[in-house]
Image (cartoon, rainbow over all chains, first blue to last red):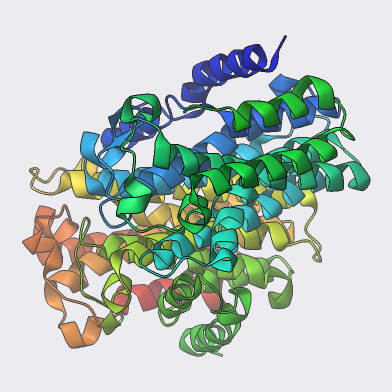
Length: 294
Length: 294
């Protein structure tokens, strides 16, 4: 299987599995539950893919690690719901359809994001019928929280907003990319590997790989926002420039950003060569991200 | 020590300890970090108190269970931040000062709530230098998530909003009170007891007690909203009636709600009599909640 087939197969599997991890949309909170389902359908499922492949690389079955892979996707979906809200990016569309607060309303979107964050932790705590020891589960939950909270994803979001209308500077830009994007990609990889029992040396290499992959993913995202069409992305384009966001295209132009993407991709490949499944999964994934059109 | 002294001593201890569990307010996300500190200062610390006393009742030291007690308070603070936002209760004040989005801004309040939710889980995963086994930590995290997410606190919030402008009915009202308030009180109690190694029988009684205490707490809250002054509560009063919220005073009048509070308090006392520290902590706590003025 090539990387596109692998990604596609896992995407289909996650698309089918995710609704089964969410509560039925009935009862007094049914709108909340519908919003959780609505906003977790679709997407590329890169983070869940990485968790599943990292587990597989160290010998853990997909079925066993599945709740953790879903947890990564739920946290990502939650961050997109809150990001799209009027008080942050005020984005009416996401993945080609109405964003959560447009489809439902603001309070439902706010609470659906909260509930998905919490559900992600619930799913991580569910990993027990697996080779993972409870110590590994506790470690994964602690690392996931550090990667996604004020010292990670949410801190990156906050810095991203603070960065608007400030002069672009590389230090701030780097902080935003590392926190807003790279740390969850790193957590997705480490979660799979820790649960599978990978040793610390292998974890270190995987962390380096995922860090570069995450940065690459954000730079290519910024390039697409500056160059792609709305039909390609399923969301408004040019939003970064309109909001005067700190991005690599804003710092060094689109061509400079492409060169930077190639450099970071090369660093990811160097790490990937030392990983199990490097040539089947991790190296092709780098090339796919560099070439991505959406 | 009587119950007021006990509560006061633990409140002071938590007030001092909580800032030490939060990241320093520096760097590109410093406003987010300031907002997290701002919104976790003050409050009665009932939930943290319950976790600490439940742990003590089954032989665990306060120092060891402290991160878990703080986790309860952070989740509660997060729910208040999001509740106060314009798209939910639109409340300008909280605990006698500006609410988070008024003191900072809406996007900072949104993200500070998210970050505090995540931090709560991080702190639970930190409990390891304790008699608690990692299996108990994983169990506590799973239960805490179920008690606070779509099947608990957040689901209760959503139902509370859906209930506005609907005819009051007791089934919906009961769903709101159980989910919005009682489940976190139950989780606070169970967290302390599970970490301390309480057996399942004792856990069952504690759960029954905390369920009634939580319902009592919400009914007295509703009564105060209908009868107290803003100076007493530190937040606007009469907001429930203005928003046509489903409350016991709306269903059965203030006197009816007081009688219901007495009945539920009596059920809590019956359970408390079977618990360790019942007459020192759990029974006086019921009487304190019945008599509360803020």
